[in-house]
Length: 128
Image (cartoon, rainbow, N blue to C red; front, side):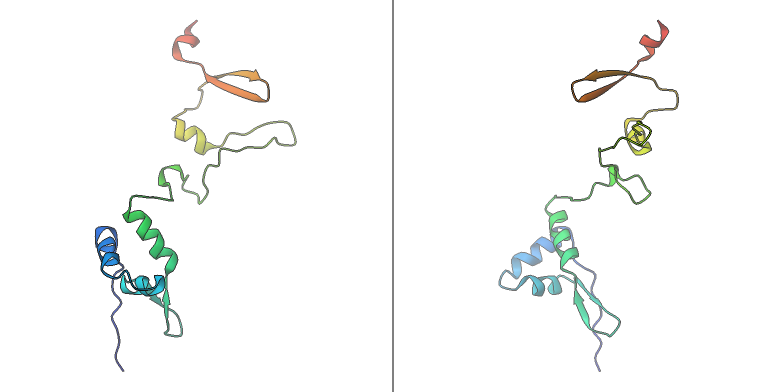
């Protein structure tokens, strides 16, 4: 019985170069050749097409994930809020952190037709 060592998946320029060398292969075969395979419980190999395609996009400079927008709790800011039962709108910590706001920062509320503008009151405005 021969065992095949699992190779580290190719990334970046190495991945793109390998794809140029094997244009005739199917998507699945290309993923295999580039190391995007894992062994499942029963010992069979599973081709990781999703990881393979994401690696190609990343190698070409296209990122579908934005790490800077994640709040560390597994959720991402959506820039969308809804009115609560008591009539309030809550702006989450992920937004205020992204803007660098601190406790005590003040805003002026300006109402328009179907929109609300929050304008931060600057230090000059606070002094009078």
